Length: 427
Ligand code: DOR
Image (cartoon, rainbow, N blue to C red):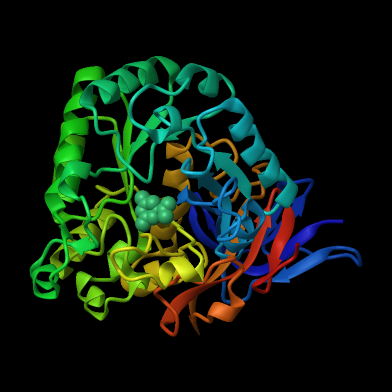
């Protein structure tokens, strides 16, 4: 029994081609203009659709262990598969945090049990993400962890960050920084701007992000370490990364769909759906982020999928937790916001993030015979609107409800298995 994708536009290394795709035993076994099916094959219609490498999210909060009322590894995996993802890097701000081998192995095992995407746990940089003592980086690296972060907060102490960078070089791992100098953001609920002054609420200045981006670029220069910047949100950060890349430093960066598409003005409603960390910024920041994504300064789109239960997001703006959903809307928001070809989309949502997360041997590859079948089939022109009732995520805190988006996932194939068929999760 094979899986056959019929009448697709397949993105290959020689460009877009009108082909059928046959998948056997988890691998692409044939690519040809027309593939005949036999009775027990699963045939997926892909008319009008592109076959792309499955998306890879560098930044997903799956909440398990600890906050299973907002998301579980299974529900988050299903949301990911519906969004066209075949791999999700699980952020470490779980309870307990992902700073030990048993927790890392638990997250991986729950991912395998769900069987919808590859769940790739990140490790903490510091014990308990407390910023005081280094986590057992070497033990975790030996256990297969390739990307480390204290996301949810940045590593404040430059001496600890320097030490982590020195070890990271030896261990061949990537450190991913949440750039926020916390002394500058205490109590902040939104961007520091004229809106925050008029609303009389504490603001989160762009500088709080940019100071840490600058510090870590300097530390990367000193140590030779690879650093990835999570969810960049300001024009100043884009400028710093552009200059650092020009200088040849091994730096990568990501942007979220919401920072590409939503402005600080939305906070005027005092609706905590729009509260996120780092905060939504100005229209000028959005322009710089888009430009950075299109010119390669920013390598990847990452969701920062951050589910929260309704009762928490209904709290007043100053008490509600920051974060919004992202996995099921990422493709639509990105395509509705930034003009991109199928090839550019595959680069920023799959190939580059797979490389940054150390997954290039099985994710992010353009279709070719013999390659692992981690694929998504997407209709880049389809318009749809977000219905919170239809979300696979356990939470509904998305700011995109009711918006019309362009670009929809039709099928997702993970390790050769059809996990989403016609937009419907199969398990
Ligand atoms: O908005 C955010 N929510 N930003 C983060 O860095 C953490 C995340 C969360 O865990 O909810």
